[in-house]
Structures are given as C-alpha cells and as structure tokens.
Image (cartoon, rainbow, N blue to C red; front, side, top):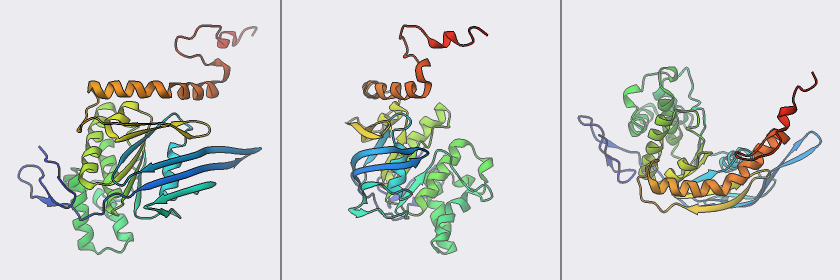
Length: 307
C-alpha cells in the first residue's frame, strides 16, 4: 500500500521495500479571478458571444470544478486562465496580476494526454525542464520524484503506446507538474477512460492535490465526478456561457462515488442544470427532439412519407 504525503516537500513513503522519496520543494497554489469577463468571436455573418459577464474567484489551493453542458464556456475559461486566449472585455488575474499570456505558473492537462510518442515517459516529463535549461542531473531527479508521485517510476522507459490510457493520463499530470505550476488546469482529463480507471484517477488527483496544495480548476460534464473532487462546484449556463450557481461541497475527504451523500448532492446539482442540458439538446436537434417522458407528435414520424 501507499502512504499519502502530509505535505509537499516532506518525505513520502512509497511501496514496501522502495526508498522514501522527497518530493520537490514546490510553490503552492495561487489565486485566480475572472472579473466581468466577456468573449465574442467573429463568424460568417456576425459574431458569437462565448462568455457573458463571467465573474469567478478561485482561492489559492482551492479545488474548483466547472460543470455544465456543451457550449457553456468551461474550456474557454481554462484557455483564458492559461493565457491561450484573451477576453473581449473584463480581466483575468493570477495572484492579482493580469494574465498577459501563457506561463510556467499555469499548466494544462487535456482530455488527450498528448505525450510525445517518440519520447519515453521519463523524457516526456523532463521535456519542459529541458526547455527551461535545467541540467541533466536535476532533470533526472525531478522526473523520478514526479513519476514516483503518480506511481509510474517502474514504467519510466516505456513509450506512450506501451502504456494504458490511465497511465498516459498520470504521465501527463506528472509532466504538467514538472514546471512547478501554481495552478493546474484540467480539461475533462478522464472523459475518454472507462469508469473503473476514471474512478482510480479521481482518487489519484485528489491525493496529488492534497500533497501539492496546488490550485486546481477542473472541467467536467460528470456531476458526480465534480462532487467527488471539488471544494466548490460552479454551474455554467450555455450560449452565451455564464455562471448560474455555485455549490460548496462540505463533505469529508476522501470521498467515494458510491457515497450516499455524494449521490444526493450530485442529484440536486443535476436538477439545477437539467434545463440547460435540455436547451442545448433542443437547439442541436431542432424540432425533432423531445424531452424524456414528453408526449406529443414526433415530427420524425413524418420523415419519408410520400416517397
């Protein structure tokens, strides 16, 4: 069994027979603020409003999940915080400083692990450190610390195609942590994984967050996953994206998906966003869509008549 670290920077006990590992002395989380942020993009024949007057504050070290249907601007918020996009109006701030572009203090983990296929896992983790000019011995020590943190040290010489999907995602998390970010931005990182692997990695992320004290902003469509992980769940409305509601999750950690309290809170939050999900479904399916249990004439019954 593995014992979880009390503090990032204190010795961490690993599997029986393995030496204790001292995690790197890392900076803890930083605050993030979106202040009345709006974003519009030009399209053929006009403009589309992606975000509308979004204000959101995330405290240093907080774990926040953004939850909502497609088109609610969840990933766009991550791009703004990462400095990969700029708002049309309003401000995005990192520790009370305006975000002007990407930086090593903010790292992104995507749905696809996006590891370089020609590099070993160890070299993937070391890649950002090499870009920063870190020497070979220091890079090697750092990659070992991080790969042990995500329980992948024994697979350090494997290439991505030799790893399972869950292992690749853990490797992507290790690489994201390599640059010692204060903020970890996670964009549906487990969406493509099977349910069992997804639950395992939820526990891994919670453990890493507890050990590193990083600020995490986590995007998901899964209500129960949001309740399982977050200190606070932010519900987003769609088209244009806006903050509808926030819920504090005051359940003790660690949590389990099958915990009755997690399920009850998830059901309540699910009901709050049901109308937004239905709105998206109606827009995408036009008049052919009907809500579950809704009665009435289905226009699809007329398709093909008279042919």
